Amino acid sequence: MADVGPIAYLTGEYPRATDTFIQREVAGLRANGIDVFTTSIRKTGVEHLVGEEQRAEAAQTFYILNAAKSPLRLLKCHARALRKSPGRYFRALALALRTRPPGLKAGLYQLFYFAEAAVLADHLQQNGVTHLHNHIAKASCTVAMLMSELSGIPYSFTLHGPDIFFEPHHWRLDEKIARAKFVACISHFCRSQAMAFSDPSHWSKLHIVHCGIEPGRYDDASERTGGNLLFVGRLAAVKGLPVLFDALEALHPKHPDLHVTIIGDGPDRAALEERARALSDMVDFVGYKSQAEVAETLRRMDMLVLPSFAEGVPVVLMEAMAAGIPVVTTRIAGVPELVENGVSGVLAPPGDAGALADAISGLLGDADLRAKMGRAGREMVTAEFNIAHETAWLAQILAEYQNGTQPPLRPVREG
Image 1 (tube, helix red, strand yellow):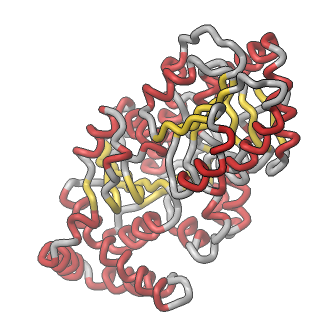
Image 2 (image 1 turned 180 degrees about the horizontal axis):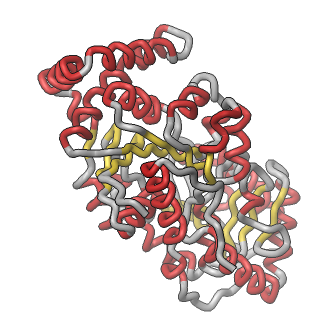
């Protein structure tokens, strides 16, 4: 494998408590000998710095908007880009205008992205960065695309979903795929959506790179009693928490000792706490927690419940499966590529509180089945969603594209 790097990572906010998988990926690439500079559009709030890992990453991350707030620095970055290559500068500006969404406000934001792209390009060039990889294909990926046109530094991105697939034309997913060196899709479902919005000539550069976990974090399990449920996620409408509350109300008469811990925060927290007021003895909202705290909580849980309406492939499901507990979630998007119904968990129809209650009840009453599903889940994530394997695969993709060779869809397995 050829030497790679140094490279940079870009996201809208880094590090976030909800995106620990990106932090693990960065650490994994560094473990593979690649120098990785982390960059972010915005600085995260202190509520996301929930552990030493997050604080350390925040301390060494370059924040584009912070730098761009200095008018002198902003002007210098643009002046250097214009002086270095007037052709590239005006092509990047034209690309920004050509790919802007409709509407005055959206057009104005596109000019902001162009301004940010020059600041990012200047930072990357000064640090000798040879490639930029972006996570989340929305605004930050627009900045990555414009930076690449401005500087000549190639870019790639990891495509997650589901929100990008709600507005693929608004975010010009087609143009981003066409101009990217490659695209890391987190699942086959995700890749199929990328194929739907891109020209077939670009399909060969759509690779499957799973988000991953460290199975070793979840080796030790405490004694489990059967009635402790866990939800981990952003407190937003897409996660379907009201459906879980409806299911809990149905379960309460037969399972009065049932208890649900809700880890996470978000825009709907106040409304959800109000909705759960009648379930106050059953539900605890505990806010964001660090990776270590989530792992410790999983040791005490009997199952994880995720009643989402839309997902990519939720990392929290991987964490629960690695901890040896069954998962109850919804049959959507790429989730069935991770959770095999009846084997490592139960897949319920999204939005169906009765089916969700039945799935939870079935597991509550069968400790042997919970243990069997927990073992199957751990085997699955250890084999297919191990961050050490996935970052080695991503490093291979980076190296092969640098060498001018074509990587396969997934790594070739031996034996």
